[in-house]
Image 1 (cartoon, helix red, strand yellow):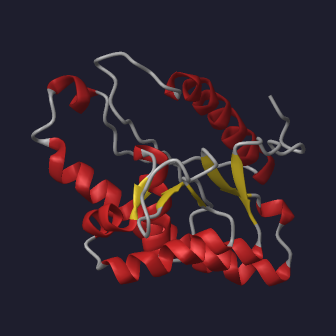
Image 2: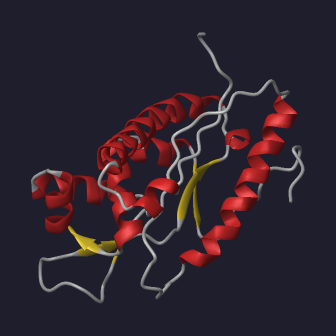
Length: 196
């Protein structure tokens, strides 16, 4: 496990964001597209447009922006003629704060605003569905926050330990054929409380 002064190194299956890539992805539709491709696999603009509630022209525009910057790639084994299918070559996206220079800070704020909107919508949908969930999934659901008084070093150590736990469960995620497996989403937000 990395110590607080040694950040978690990037994995080969991670998209590491820099100022340029944050500028491209800092749009809720693009974040949603990447999430759908990660969760459900390759899609074309028609299927994505339907799921996003957009027209195919707008969806194709966002797909081109992501593709032009290597965040998604064409699935050449699918599609015919003009129909293009897209997939995402990475399992996760990460912004490494310690690697950001001054020019990237504004871009990171724009990216985080778009990300927080998507996360908030996901939580709202989960809350709306909560009453109709089977008991075992209601028991496995939590909406909670925990407040601590920590130093920056202790907070960094806490995040490192949480990442280690999440990485252990990521091993279950690859091509699992069990009948009772469902998509389970963990959102992790940790920050110094400001404005209270």
